[in-house]
Image (cartoon, rainbow, N blue to C red; front, side):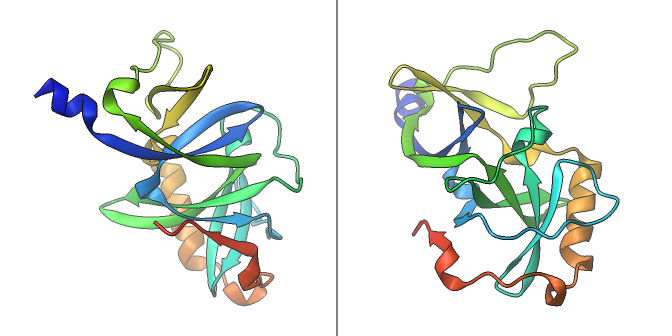
Length: 181
């Protein structure tokens, strides 16, 4: 049975934050967009950059660097928004994750993924599924459903439902890069 578990191949979308490589299970990723204007929502946490208009729907965007205690993501030609589905209260919510760049989709077996390192009791790392390796670099595999707290997810869901898409700049169809999953 353990051989079967080790040979199960999973796909992950890799992206960079501050020169480190992170990954999300491809099943949670809907699409990747080029950076588009983000409308700031007042009285939201700093890591919540605002909302974008995605085909007529307001989608909240989280700056992953700010969420992880890094400096704000700089807007460059490589900056992108990864559109993901997050589970909350048995329902899925769509959000954008701002990243420095997207690299590629990689395949890893469960046997190629190590447990996340123990950092002590004061450092919360339950949002890390494991550590993979690509060439000579570590890939930090994230659990998108555990990056935000329940309160933050509730706020995202309310932004998703309360924001008016009419006041958000339009996203042209050629700005999206579909992943053809």
